[in-house]
Length: 282
Image (cartoon, rainbow, N blue to C red; front, top):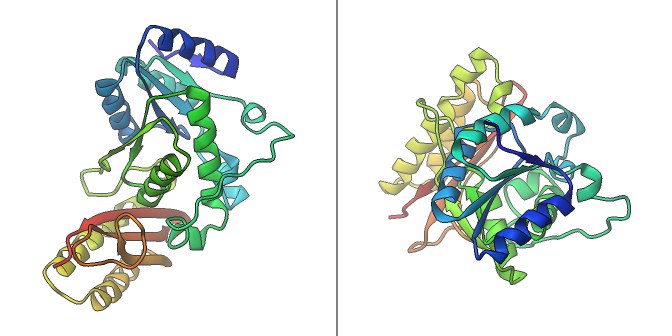
């Protein structure tokens, strides 16, 4: 049986009010649809931790820098509802765009610091769109916990900072990145790769993990990253927008004794792929 789809905010709030009155905890998994095993892993984590689970589906126009990318983003609402049914999701919230952003909507949430480098430098305004829609979805669902994947590492740090700074009564729960057997991080955008491109894409995580191992073994980061970038381009992956070692929390320059993260964004078949991996600095 498919998960029930709820569209009006008033109907969602009626459901949430009933659950809250019964003292039930609510988990939310925010998505843009085109669900895959990565999303489903978040749902399972939410089911294990909460009495009720809401999955939201909203392709947020305000986080796209490219109108063509927004238009091409996969939209598979009914297939998504079918995937969620066996997992026992209580409802799939699919709000109308005008309900999320009515014509008079004038508020933008902006988070500084963690949003500046990497994605922030290459996608101006993207994180303002993410921060705004996440805040709206938290307020709409009134969830106690929100589940986010570590694949979008910078986004995860943004959401953590947002909840902390705005004193939002919600726990942000990070969940491990889910990968295909060849190591590629699962993403809805992977559907747009050609068969040849999908085969070549395996070089991205392979190179990333290899660079992380070399840095952990004591090789100089600068030289390792230069070599890794060349390996990606030799594999037909490019242009490489960034391949950088950063502090895992602040996303500023890494410091010894603190968790670090190696992050990459690169193009393949006209599809922008991102990935990241933890690094323990020697």
